[in-house]
Image (tube, rainbow, N blue to C red):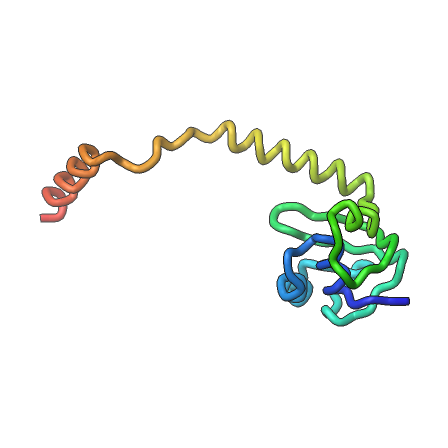
Length: 127
C-alpha cells in the first residue's frame, strides 16, 4: 500500500492543509530519501523524510500510512523522529531563545507626546 506524500504530510499534521503541504513540497521544503520530490509521489513505510516547517527541520521515518486526518495522538504514531533531529531542534530553539533574550527590548509604539515631539523634529529638520 502507498499514499500520496502531500496527503500523508497533512494526515501526520505537519501542515494544516493539503495545499500548504503541496506548496512546501514544490518549494523544496520536503525531501524524500534525500532528494526533492513532487506532491503526488507515492510514499511507502520506511521512507525517510526531511521536513522544514518555519525555523525547524524534522527528520522522520514513516512508520505507517494514512490518507485521512485523525487526532494528533494518531498522527504521532505515523512517524518516528530521529534522535539527531530532536536534539538539533531543541538546541536551535535554546539558541534562538538566548539570542532573543540578549537583544534589547523595544518599548513599543510612541505615545502621543513622543509622536508630537517626533513630528516637530521632522518638520524642523526637513524645512
